[in-house]
Image (tube, rainbow, N blue to C red; front, side, top):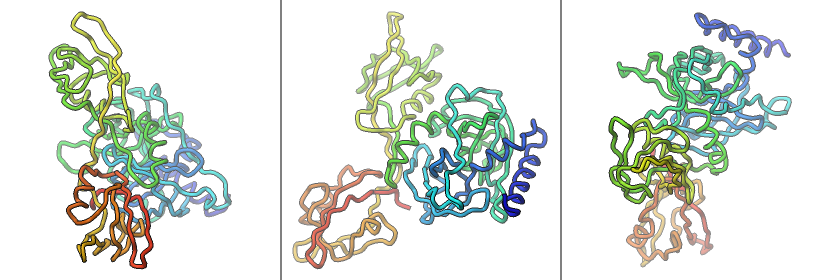
Length: 400
């Protein structure tokens, strides 16, 4: 180890030991192993998963970023690429090239914990950059605590864990580990009665089972979005002393009066929890889940339920404006750094078809885009000023 790397390792270990004061000391070897997986991402944090440079972080950490330069805890800087993001569930995946690592080789990525490891009362370790304290010297902070509860629904955090390890602004996207170096989740929210963004002993992390479900989808999203499922249209739920009851079946296979016992194997302890559980999975065509139902005759059944998708909030944005000229619809302006700019569309190009529909006016364009949502990829066929036709698939993004 070089003198510089040796000094950094000593600093990291010293910071780790200081942060663990009042809790069970974190062994040096474990602290160094966990810190080696940490990544500074913008004003927040991230964690390397696996050896190939995949980084998990929060969507709200990278939201609005155009430069995805990241730093590892050994002060190395890398240019990362955004592979995919989940604005609803607050997950994003970046990637850095292992070939760019000094000396080559793989990264010290960590392993996602199985659901069986999310044990309330177990000791946990959080790593992050609270209040940007590590920005000057690239030294992340380590804190320790216990897991308060596992696999709960808290609003859009539909599969989360709660811990009392001190986390603050700057910890977002950073790892929450157990003492076996397994990644229990990524820290993302703080709950406080004061409303201030200061730790009150209640920190929420997106749980490892949800990370495991979304990671492959996000890694394959080609810079786009992964969306969440949603419960069937028209399904209305209510509750009584015995649990969650179907009030109106809507497009679900349930009958009014039936009770929902579990969704995807997780107990439906309240209406809010049931709604969250329906929305906890990555959406894809023909997405479904299994629901345990108690029927009026006292029997139970496992019912496969088709799921809708949860829309990403905001306005679908392409970055184009149009003019009509000589009976043609022409691109009049392209916003810098917009989806249209990234796709190579240029001012003066004529729209030929959009989503397979001929474009003869701005009205026909509006009709072609009816129902387009954030995250959709729409095919545009255009003819540039030189008369060359070009086909692009335009990703509609959240408007910043």
